[in-house]
Structure formats: structure tokens, C-alpha cells
Image (cartoon, rainbow, N blue to C red; front, side):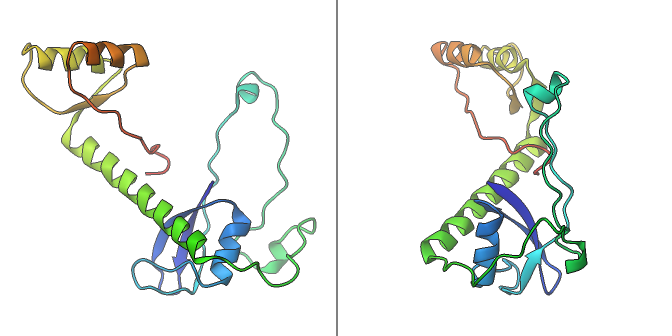
Length: 177
């Protein structure tokens, strides 16, 4: 999956998740990508900073294979590398089901971002001490409050065995929020 920031002709920006760049281009050409603010289908990818993450190999000092340079989506055609030929022929048709799936995935991501913001605003971050803090709250050693943090699978199972209620939630990384 790839995440793009998209901008409509009115300047509204929104994000969408796509299987790959070809899927985005196909959906865009078919008018299946629309601005959630104004409904415009006249959209294009906005310039974005790359999301960089190391692999185990690069963390050990082994260089990763180089990716070919990408064209600047906001640039003109003279910025496009010569090694990247333009797609030939019309874009493949996009089914309504594929367009709906992309829209739903974008909405799910938006909900996950909003959930993270809500938790961070309304709960105390206790980091890797989550299990200890949850026990203190459960057994009345500290006052009731909302907390969030990290717990290993073993710590989570131990909390469950003690009858301590908690939930695990999918967490959108800060670089995406």
C-alpha cells in the first residue's frame, strides 16, 4: 500500500491509500478520486516528503539496493527521468468496487488518526510501564484515569488473567498522523 497526499483544484488536501501508483493513476483518470471537502474530481498528487525507514540490513551497515529516481509529481514533464517511459494506451477501467474499497480504506485511516489524537489528548502516556500502571489503577493503589502505553504479549496475557480490562488498538505512526 502507498499513501498519497492529494490536492484538488480548490486547494483542499486529503490523503488516500492505494495499492500502488498505477492504481492511483487509474482511479484518478477514471474520476474515481474526489475531494472529500468539495467533491471535485480534478485532483493530483501533492508534493510529499518521502517516508524513509531502514531495513535490518541497512541498520547493520549493509546498503539497500538503490531505487530509481521518481518524477516530482508537482513538476513538469522535463523533470521526469528518461528511464521512466510514459504509460501507453488508455488507463485500465476501474470497477466501482475498487473505487469504493480505496475510499473505505481512506476513511478507516482517517478514523485511526482521529482515534490516536483523541487518546493522546485524553489519556496519560505511561510508555512501557503500562501493565504496572494498569495494575495500580485496578487494585486502587492510584486514582482512576485513562492511560495508554506499550505492553508485551506476555504482559497483556497476565493482565487478562488478573481480570484487568484493557484494549489493544491499532496505532497510526506519528509520521502518518
